[in-house]
Image 1 (cartoon, rainbow, N blue to C red):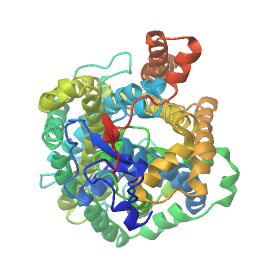
Image 2: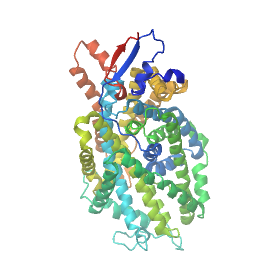
Image 3: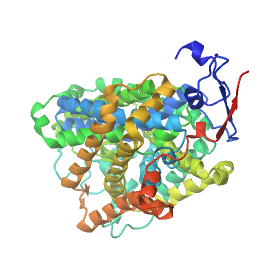
Image 4: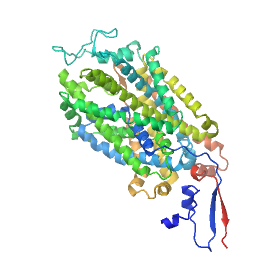
Length: 597
């Protein structure tokens, strides 16, 4: 469309309407004037483009980038793992990332109300996403409470996880500092850092398991209360407030990672860790597990399906180039994961050199233990240990805060868009209530056995459910709403039509990608274990029940929608799978015709 053609559009109308009804300079042709009669409240937008980009980067780059990617990388062939990781990113993760940004920006709706524009019968997906986000808030913020406990404990001349003379230490505690000589390390030995984490912070020794969690730790309860207080005052006013906060919380971790990388590279034995991290084992590419781990890692790293990308993109200007945003932010996320591997493994190589062990013996622990035990112990052995401990755990907190801001904003946007007349003017109170619900739901993770609950939620409550939800989302958009219609929407926004590659990914590759992860999870269920505690079979049933409790919203809403619709079954089914409400930016208009004389 030329500039001459576009100049005759009525400037006051929405972008989609003007794209559909061109004017004519021919006086003999009737002129259609489209008058928008909606008095809908203007939607909030980001103050700056960088606010949006930093928010998306802060959401995508979380604690998993720091510990999960390096661990999975060395476990699955080192440098050879980068091949399946990149392939899964190009054909699965990035197309899903792009799809959600485009959907949110075009329809300007949260994860619930957006379905009336796409496929009404799938509206239960939005409710399922909100429940999954609550489950994540129940356990994810507890990890930040642990980090805050460490941060407060770091303001001491001697870090408390460096000595064996504390009240929580046992006879097996073996102080193994770089300054100590002639110290033997046996299989029964435990480091001061491990005992500080398990016996002082978590206090898991006071709980026999999930069947008896014990009392709530008041120290962790206060730490979590402080975390949620920060969260509330960062998101209570909307994206204009949180968009300013992420300038600190999203950029500070990169500064710390750079400092830690430089420091780690100068430590003796650092090269051992880097070689162990990147040494390719090409034979492992023949294992199905490697490809499963690559698919799962890129999916949970980029984070489609949690309603966050839809919410953030819905506050963008209509013509914002979300295509470039998707490529930029997903690339930054993957590069951050790769960089974090060097930060972690230079220190693990140093630990292996100091203990005179192999790197794999030092890096045997995955998950938060890698940060709170191994890395904490390595920091304690560095000069200026207090300084490095403070900035490291501050980085962990900020990485977690970004993801929490995003996850809760996804829920808030969804609910405000679905119930605008009730909640829009009461946003502060709604956010306060939501934060209170998250805090109360997290109390079980603050008990003596709370670490067992965190592991259960992480393995079962969110992973399988959200992958299944995203699979249905892709099917609804590509097969019901239609890939051609979706691509036309993108052309209206961005001025160009998505290429053949993206269409094939949305129609076929992405569904196969997600189905591959789901089938792999069902065929090879994870063996859940934490420290010396093996989860009994009944906990697996409990975990699946928690996961199903969110996913059940999808079929439940389908039944509800069909029962409440009028007409024959064929008519009801057609209406339920066809858009019946225009997007917010083209809603409620009337046409008045003027015939030129």
